[in-house]
Length: 224
Figure (cartoon, rainbow, N blue to C red):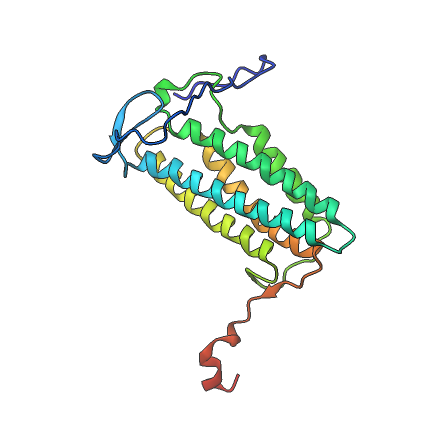
């Protein structure tokens, strides 16, 4: 069973003690790696694939945040502050994804009560932020295509990688106990990336690209 967080502790998560003074160790040359508890597993184990995909997502969020910073620096629009707040949110999400990776990299019996993880608080914050953005966004009458602005496209990439991470964690949950908040967080986060992509286009005053099935090549043969 995954150890619960003690709500009475002012610092719920312990501060990691990490020293990285040499990157390559050669211990993985045989296709093995170790979990937080020290257990050796294959590098293509579903648990490794799960938190590896979360790590990949974190990298894409970093790309989106860099795009955002460059967009703000070059923007002549009147609302760079709102984009700056989105950048702060993406940075927070990167920390949360690392917390999620920590718990996924640990077998349930080895989880410490103060080990970093995602909780109901992180999920609720995402919901609040989505509601704030949705309040001013127009109702969609079709699906949207990624694009219109680089930031929009980057956030859509984050959304799709987040969905893949969610699928991997669901797969892991079939063979091992998984903190249910891990799946719930990724589910909500992928929705948030979709909303943030629309929010970014709104702030940049860039029109959204709506899906039109009759823009396909076959439409020419049908007189579309």
